[in-house]
Every structure is written in structure tokens, then in C-alpha cells.
Image: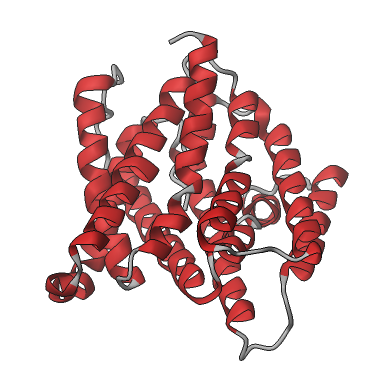
Length: 297
């Protein structure tokens, strides 16, 4: 893979991640079924990639690795379910922007968990995200679907930040594709008791959207992201990955007529700027650490 094709693969992966909310809204199934199906299809796609397209040797897992993967799988389950609840309640744009608060949570949690000093530019990041979320919120009435959906989306961002920090702790040992595969297995197992009794009620067209969500927005997107890191700097990959909300919101506007207000556009711009700043700050991290964050919403 040349640098040019790797950069193209990164943008395609970011676009696929951006389609997550779109497919989630198209599928009429419940968030639990959507996440269960997504994880099941992702396991198939990641297994195929690991078998035929990846040269990475899998790491033998010890007890500590298994505990960490179990925890990250549980966090991924909560992250995805809360995100799709937000999509159903408030729409793709608000759900995507609420989730995009995760860099601010990551900065705060890194300071608390890893006892890392929070720098002035990271404080600015938190402020930008906070102001952006205030502007994105149409009103502050908890009875409003938009406000409730935004809260679910922010919770999804918090869970993703915790997931990223958990992955960071194990990224030096476990290859990213192996970690993603194990996490998706945990997700499917967690939701099996809730989802399986309802599977017969899922429409055929919904299985199409869920299949596309699992194969392309999870398996293929993650694989493209990881493969591109062989020739692209982690800093560049992080900045391209930060374009994901732009793709998601644009697609929601085109497909579902989710017309954002000027206030929402300004708030979204602040959040996206914060994501780019966060990506630049974390660009010096190892490729494995960046790739470990690839399983997004």
C-alpha cells in the first residue's frame, strides 16, 4: 500500500464510520438488536481480515489480557447501545455531535487515571467541547427528545473515552484487529439474551442495514484504518479519523433532511475543532495506541 492509497483508505474508513448513525436510523429494529447484529457481522468480517488480509501474528492472551478485553467489550456494548438510543431519539446529527465529546472526557480521565498533567491546550479542548454541546442543545428541557438524545450521546462519548483508555493500557501487547474481534464477541454474547428472542421480528431490509453496519462500518472500516497505519503517520491518521462527524452529519442532512440551525452548526464546528486539536495532541502516540481507538460508534 502506497501513502496515497493509504490516505484514500483512511478517508474511506472515516466515511464508513460516519455511516454508522445513518444505518442505525434506517434500521427499524431496537438498539439492542442493532448492536447485537452489528457485533455478529463484525466478527465475521474481522475474522476474514485476520485470516486472509493481515500478516499480524496473534498474541497469546493471559488472564490479565482476558479481563481487560472483557471490560473493554462491556464498555463497547454500552457505548454502542447508548449511541443508537440517541440516534433513535434525537437523530443522527445530534447523536454524532454528542458522541464527539469523547476527546474532552479522554483528557479529563487521562489526568485522573494515569495521573498525567493536563496542559493548557487540553483545557482549551474541554472548554471548546463544553461550549459546543451547549450550542448544539436545542433547549434544556429533559422532556425534549433532542435533549434526552444528546444526553444519551454524551454518555456514549464518555463510555468511548473509557474504552479508549482501556485499549491504551493493552495496545502494546494485543494486536488491534485481535482486540477488536474479541471485543465484538463480548458484545454479541452480552446482548444475546435480549436480542435472540426478538430476531424473528426483524425485517429483511433491517438485516441489510445491520449487515452493512457490521461488515463495512465496523469490520472493513477498522481493517482499513489498521492497514493504513503501516505507511501513514499516526498523527495523519488521527486527523483524518477526526473528519468522521463531518461525514456523518452531512449524510444525515442529505438523506434525512436533518437541517441544522446556525447555532447547531457553530456548536458542531467548535466540537470538530476540538477533535482535530485532540488528534494533533495525540499524534505522537504509537500506531498501536491510535489503532486501538479505531472501533468507533
